[in-house]
Image 1 (cartoon, rainbow, N blue to C red):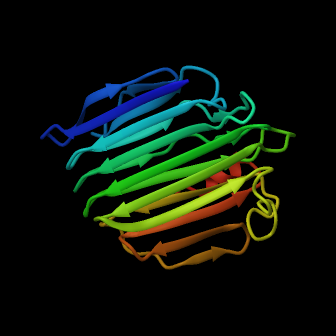
Image 2: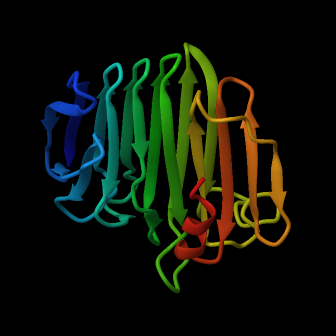
Length: 240
């Protein structure tokens, strides 16, 4: 299955945001939901199971100057096996203009046994743009070993690299469960906060949990990363 969804937001000149384009194709269904804070809020609704190996899904987001968009999903995304040798792909491309804000806060990606999935996100931020970008990966459903999943995130700020991050888990990723990577934790994720108005925060590693905070050199940005025994605990670490 191939699908393309597209979201374009513009400031309305009265302190709010309007969605001038909201295009969906099954299984990527975008639904605007009510809000009272001037931020256009959209939920991604899965119109079919998956992604299933062989699916090629794309989501494009454009946030114009001074607009603000918040994107959630209504449920976790479960990557499932399909025809032998096939890979499922979910590609997100986002452009956030000066003074604009994008909150990308979906539910978790679950790498079910036997899957082969690539999640790739590329975000371009103009100088003065703000971003909250959360990625969470659960390695297998309850009681099962995970399939293969690669999560790659690329963020540029003011035309320069800000973040390049990749994680691979599953049978084709040697050592992924070892002490140098997840150390057996079934849940992992990160939260990137880019906010020109937010004071810089120093690097910090929590000794009682496996979580860390790291300021980035390429812009007004901080990256939180964590591993956890379950999705609920992971989310608690990635609130920023």
